[in-house]
Image (cartoon, rainbow, N blue to C red):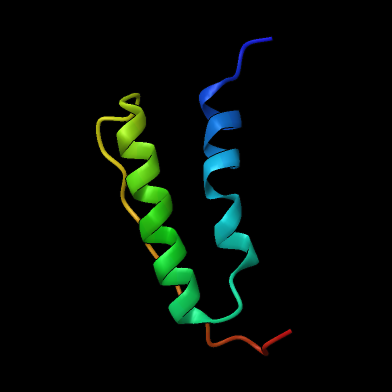
Length: 57
């Protein structure tokens, strides 16, 4: 079984989705970015956190 980049990406960023607040999201996103860069299969990894002014649902 061969992992695709998408499989690897999903695995490496999974901790981000367990974050409890914005600070945690930022910290875990930075950690995930570092992991992905260390793998050496991505030339560039950017983290963009988009906020919404929605209803909070």
